[in-house]
Image (tube, rainbow, N blue to C red):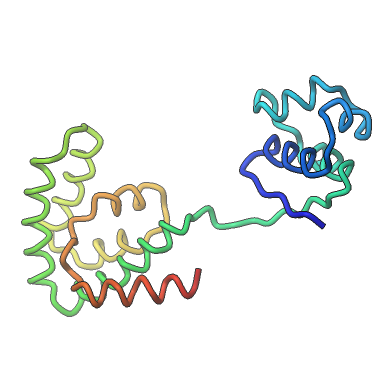
Amino acid sequence: MARVTGDTGGELVYQARTQAGLSQRGLAELAGTSGPTIAAYESGTREPRLSTLARLVGATGTELVVELHDGMTRSDRRSLALHAAIAERLATDPHRVLQSARRNLQTMRQAASTRGAHRLLDEWTELVADRNIPAITRVLGDRSEHARDLRQMTPFAGALNDNERTSVLAAAAALL
């Protein structure tokens, strides 16, 4: 059986329909709906309910299987792996890591051009200045959207050497 994947119901309907060699009208007839409804789903102007999506995909001869994920991308997982290693380094050599982070923050602040970037840098500056290792470590491992944004502006470049970084990324890739 063919596999279709997508981020929206419309993408799934389109892929299942085209793989089955059906027109929008043909799928509509098989699924007991209208061609304009299929077009609205595929264009993203309407989103089908899960039961409707199962019926539409099922009409193409494809089974709908729903898989739930934690919402984290491959990039997010790599970032978490790198920052877990940075947290370990921070625990063993806080003086060097924080000193480097303070220098990096000064450079980053000069290059930052948006208010949002400055807010994130302000937050990092406060964390680093307080030298609150447990609070920094929590941010480095937090899966929230805000922590992800903070890690995108990480001041911890250079905390790991190239070999350590490569090793962490290789280990993370093996798990992904």
